[in-house]
Amino acid sequence: MSDPVETLVTPVRLLYDWTATSAQAEFLDAIQEGRLLGERCPVCQNVYCPPSGSCARCGVETTERLDVADKGTVVTFCIVRVPSQNIEVKLPYCAANIMLDGSNMPFIGLLQEVEAEDVHVGMRVEAVWAPKSEWGPTFENIRYFRPNDEPDIPVESLGDWV
Ligand SMILES: [Zn+2]
Image: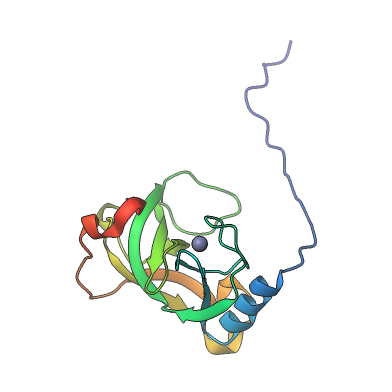
């Protein structure tokens, strides 16, 4: 008898075509120019980034587009200590939900240039962009976020996100 199988590595690859909605296409056009495009709900006034074309809360179409900042506040985060074949970031690393200035919906970003134990809710961060010559219609234009020198935002002012 051979030894029992305890683990099995199964490579999985999924290729698919995805067609951006008009709101998503506008976002991709903007990020190609170094801007982060959001949308404002005409009912609740929340600003979402990236735009989807509708407000999930109110169920109405959103047509007002506006730029949001490429800096914001960490509202939640996760320290990743488990390696993955598809991620080349040194462990441990931080995936953070970042409330970009001017928006009401967190934006998920990789946080770097900070030790995992120093990451905290309320930390101010900024985007680190790839060189402009590499920009395309992709989120990959932003390499990661890093802490900036701005003072923390008080946790109690972050509302329901913390
Ligand atoms: Zn709304």
